[in-house]
Length: 193
Image (cartoon, rainbow, N blue to C red):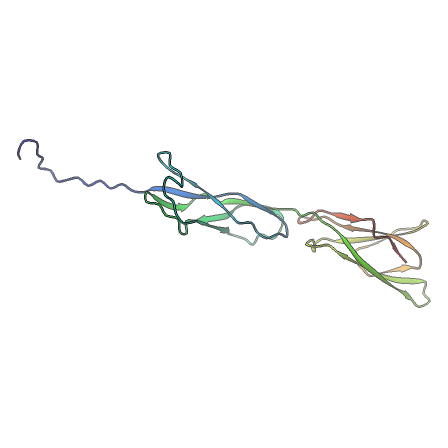
């Protein structure tokens, strides 16, 4: 070889793309509400880059895995994200850590819709049927307390209609709390006859 020349073969250097991962962000909702839009954070940028300076295009997709998640509670690793259409010249994309999905207990409520009653012919009793709306808290137990106005023993039941001795009663309705909904009461239903 001439001076300053090499007789070795030229070297080829391969530079692999750096890896970026999609880490699922934690998310929550209140029981009975639609699922939120699940999001992610990108991790693994090099040389101080971010999504903008690295020219990241497209979008990843996040969804619930391992469900269904229908009751209030905390569900670790329930949100998983995949690269979908994410692309960048110097980065390869993959799934990272899964996120926690939390379903919060809903606030229970009772709405009084009305009542009907029918006197049982000559028996001295009446059948009272109360109608209440408990919204999304349909798995909660509803209890009814009928207290005779002027004193007497309260009659408690979790069914409606109920047969009561003739008289005037104050009515107290309770929505018993459970894992999905808090309890609630309605003391303003008034009187059953």
